[in-house]
Structures are given as C-alpha cells and as structure tokens.
Length: 430
View 1 (cartoon, rainbow, N blue to C red):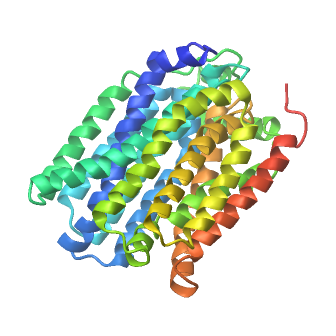
View 2: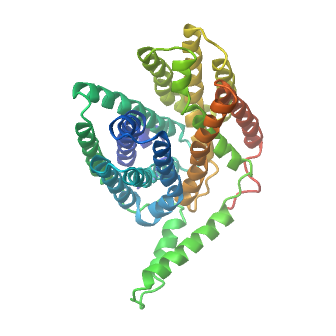
C-alpha cells in the first residue's frame, strides 16, 4: 500500500474503496441483526427472556472489543487482507449459527463469534487511513467518509430487513439467507484489500521481517510459538516506548462512546412512553437526526483537514451537551425534531474531528496495535453505558440517562480543552 497524503487521492485509492465497502456491508449486517432482527426473533419466535437477549448482546460487544487490539497487531504482521478475510469468515459462521441454532447458549456463542468477526474492522480502517495520510495527518475527509459508511450501513440494515420481513410475512429464514449473502459478498470485497502493510517509515514491517530471520535453522514445532511470544513481547515494548500521550486521553476515549452507550438502550423507550411518538414518526425522527449527520460528515471532514480539529470538537461537544440536556425536558414534537437535528449536526462535527485528533497521537511504530488498543478502550464505553443507563432509567427517572449523557459530553469538552493544549505527556519519540 503506497502512502499518499492528498485527501482526495486517498478516497480514490483501491485500499480505501475496498475498506469503505467492507465497512458499509459489515455495518449493514450488524445493524440488521442487532437492531431489527435478533431482539424480535429471540423474543417473539424463540421465546427467550430479556436477560438472555441482554447477555447475548453483551457477548457481541465483548468479542468486538477484546479482539480489536490483537486484530490491529495481526494486520501489521500478516496484512489487511488475511486479517479481514479470516475475521469475516467468522461473521459468516455466526449468521449460519443464528439460522440453525435455537438454544440460548448457541445464539449467545453466535453473537460472541459475530463480535470477534467484526473486531478488525475499525483497527484496519484507522491504521490504513492514518498511514496513507502521511506526516501532516490530513485525514479528516477520509475519517468522515468512513463514518458515512458506518452510519449508512447501520441505518440501511434495519430499514432493509424490516422491509424484507414485511414483504415475506416475517419469514426469518429468508432474512438470514440474505444476510448470509451479504457476508459472502463482504468476504469477496475484503479479498481486494492489500496484503502485507508496507508504509514508509514504519518500524513494524521491518520488525516482522527481522523476526522471520531469527530461527532459520530451527524448523521445529515450537518455532511458530516462540516467534509469536517474542513478537508480542517486542510489540508491547515498542508501544511503551513510543506512546507518550497525556493520561487524559484514556478517559476521553471511554467517555466518547459511553455517551452513546447511555442513549442506545433507552432512546426508543423514551420516545414511545414519555413523548408518545408513533413508530412511523419515530422513523422520521431517526431519519432527521441520522440523515443530517451522514450528509454533513464529508464536508465537515474536509473542513477539519483545512482548519484543524480543535474548533469542531469544542463546538461539537458543547452543542451535543446542550442538545441532550434539552431533549430530557422538552415535550413539544416540533422542538424534539429540532433538538435531534442539532444532535445530528454536533455528531457530524465530533466524529471525523475526533478520529483525526486521535490519529495525531498515534506514533508511526505499531500503528495497528495502538489503534486497536485505543478502539478497545473507546468501545468499552458501549459495554458499560447500557448497564448504567438501565439503572438510571429504573431507579432514578426516565430523563436521567439523557441528563447523564449531557454531563458526560460537557466533561468531555473540558477534557478536550486540556488535551488540545497539551496532548502529549512528554515529547513524542522521534
């Protein structure tokens, strides 16, 4: 993969196109299964309890997060193609398991395998885009395009599967067969990703080559395991020696997804039970908020490349905090639509700018492993957030999760203000 620092050329590169399509198709599968299909299928068709469904979904998030750092590390050793194709085969296996298995244990294991299969997606995407952006880190445009693929797939998956269920009189077998077809298609797309990562100035690739030369005359069964152990040890040592970020980066990564975790399990309940919004009107609400985010992502990404991340993150965090706090107290439907659109605009400012900001903190050596570590930490907020949200909903009040998310967003604005002035603990290693 050749490095090219011009944002427009990055978007036209074969790697980016294949990665964009892979991301889009995987998010269609995940969005369809987690939002539209599995909750109803496991409840209404299989008669499983809400607790079992919650455990299955938690295992999906767990598998996704636990394997992000290892998959980022693997991408730098064996390349994007081998890493993604292997993982996406797991995604296909998970869909097949969901089709044929009916037990709680079987479906829980399928969700875990689904999470493992999707875990390399963002580490590979972020590692590749960061490497291609060059030393100036002009990658806001590319980050915005990736977020467009993710949000577009997440929205299209549930909408498409709901439409298919209506047309087939709720024939879930047909739905799972279509999702299997999508999984096979995304595997074929991933085959066009580059093999080994070759980026100018990277130490990881050279380290892998050096590792291959260490045991030329010891062809025994233990050699692969010795190499793996030594490689992991060397990787951790390089990460410790090259990663010199301000410690506030770590809670900031957690908080960024913790907000989404607070909102995701209660937003539908709140609009139905407290705001008395009909299902059709709720769909329009999602289109209003999500649509404006998707439309704004690419132009905002281009402006981030031109003006930097600081103004967009400062404005975006504060706007999101104010909008979420307002959402917890308003009841007028037209005002609700206006507030949701403001939340969408704020997230369009935050998503590409935040990813571009984090990219500036990634040292050249071990990009894949560090991106995987950062994304694991960031994704952990999605695991903790729903638990906290449920407790606030049940034991405090229905608006409490939205007030909490507004407070976290305001805290994130304050943390970013400090980080933007001093992102590194010490001068980064040369």
